[in-house]
Amino acid sequence: MTAHPSDLTRRGRIAAFFDLDKTIIAKSSALAFSKPFFAQGLITRRSVLQSSYAQFLFILSGADHDQMERMRSHLTNMTAGWDVEQIRAIVAETLHDIVDPLVYAEAADLIADHKLRGHDVVIVSASGEEVVTPIAAALGASHSCATRMVVEDGRYAGDVEFYCYGDGKVEAMRELAAREGYDLSQCYAYSDSVTDLPMLEAVGHPTAVNPDRGLRRAATENGWPVLSFSNPVSLRARLQSPSRSTVTAAAAVLSSAAVAGAFTYGIRRRKR
Image 1 (tube, rainbow, N blue to C red):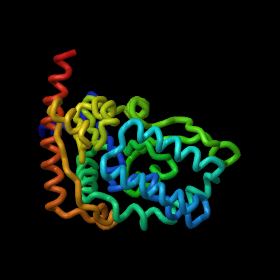
Image 2 (image 1 turned 60 degrees about the vertical axis):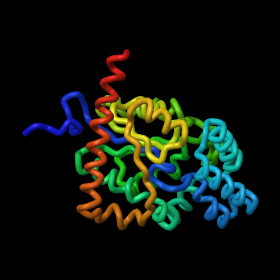
Image 3 (image 1 turned 120 degrees about the vertical axis):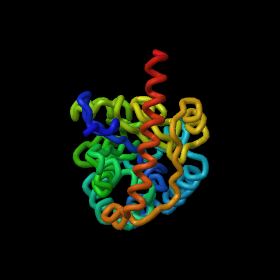
């Protein structure tokens, strides 16, 4: 039997790397928890309003590099002194209530299809690992890569140990690939933002999802597939029992992405 070109090959294992915000879920994962943090007395009402406004801008226009830097500075300053275990407990207690309604059905189907094909699923996000890790587990991902904060005596010190953003995402992907034996030239990546261009260029099969203007332009120039996700559904219901029709549709999308990605990768290889 001839193996499918995107299945496991002698060159290495295959992973699908997914950005989280606006690729899998419809909101910023970091800002989505502002209300339970307020309920626990960690942030003020003004901070909640600021987070809501930041979320509105994020959805409206996407986050460029300067916005991401400002968001990082805001979050690190705000979280300085927070108890790490308290944050993990809040996320665990409120995860499904907050994240379940935000997961795109199309993303859930695509994740399910990658897993059916024997691919590992990896969530790569600039949000903190305390938020990303449990979301990745709920999605059934094999691994996650996220921002790590400096922790001293069980509390956030107000500084970043590793920022999983831009080239940092590529660094995390390459480290994971070396450890797990992934062949990045055979791997997939999905993102909505031009700030993730390095992440998409690091794999053989890049796909733009709900792309901002900059990424749409890059996708057009490189001949990358462009997908539109717009239907948030219950995470648990969707991942536990994907319908035959949705899995078949996801498989068709994935096959198209594989063909386009392989073609693009070949062109890029010949240009080097």
